[in-house]
Image (cartoon, rainbow, N blue to C red):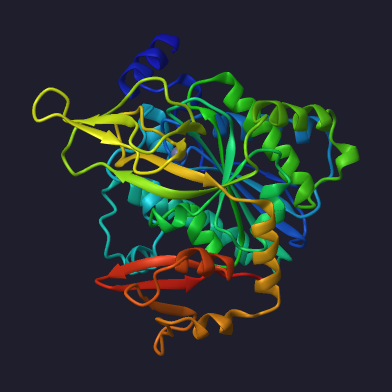
Amino acid sequence: MVAARLSSNAVQGGPADLQALPRVLGVQPARGAARGTLLFVVGGVHGNEPAGVRAIRKVLAEIEAYGLVVEGRVVGLVGNATALAQGKRFLGTDLNRLWTDARLEALRSDEVSAREPETREQCALLAAFEEHIAAGPWARVVLLDLHSTSAGGAPFTIISDTLQNRPVAFALPVPVLLGLEERIEGTLLSWFADQGHVAVCLEGGQNELPSTVDHHVAALWLTLVSAGLLRAADVPGLAAQRARLENSARNLPAVVELRYRFAIPEGALFEMRPGFQNFQPVRRGEALARIDPGSGEREVQSPLSGRVLMPRYQALGDDGFFVGREVRPLWLELSGWLRRARLGWLLLLMPGVHRDPLKHGELSVDRRVARWFTVEILHLFGYRWRTREGRTVRFVRRRDAV
Ligand SMILES: [Zn+2]
């Protein structure tokens, strides 16, 4: 039996504790009325990021062991189970690029091949989300999506900057990264946020480090408390969990906004220069990576000064690296005030900014006319960059619950 298990693991290639994972790692309370907050915590949307799954197991087991009373419902889910079993980021397609309206419509009408491993994964996840949401009415739905990075460095959260996301993200004492949804389409995070739910992604640290599991564990306990599912006084060692995150992210800015993504050209070989960590300061023009080393080699430089984020030291994915810049807390306060005061109509007084008559909540901006700080001003008012067609840039309003 042991021999058979060992050999099957050798075929699968992934760690022993990640074989044949159930979709649902646990539900707390196991039976209970649907009221209050529904918290989904997902681990391993990327199969080379096992820390989240391990953290969810640990916290759910401890809730049970301590006999804690959960108000609301927490559901622990596995993201890409087949990829986790093989220790690979994904098998056919990145599961964290598939959460677009068009794709979900195709899934529901069976237009997508169910032979693709990630299609099966997505269908199973979607079914789990829908089952628990339908059990409501819930006061609110929260997603905590646990990830890790191939580079080392401090943990951080990623959110779409809606007013309802802020308090849950800021309850974790680590930097908050804004603007990823303007650079990447189809993440689970933005799909949840676009439905008006609360959605926070935690990048817990380097993929294989044991401390990454600890960061996820700490973030999950703190989120259970900040989202109102557990009382702070009931959680043993909560202060130590908070201190663990605080210590890991010392001297870093509270908020960083992404300003640049280096997309790896299709078919190109990408090699990040060694030694970069998340939040490491970089200068404009600094060489960060090489494309096609050896034949036709080309150096990739940072187009701006700032902090490097998610430099790619793994085999799969087309995000080479990102560069972000610090956002002053005052700017966020101003933006919150402007959005609650519903002053968005002021934007239409700016030259080159027009309301889209066909799509509610969308603005088109003529870049020839509106040059200065247009993106910054639109961010302040809760809009995000969507597409560019020639001179026209389209922005869409984020779904604030105000
Ligand atoms: Zn990930």
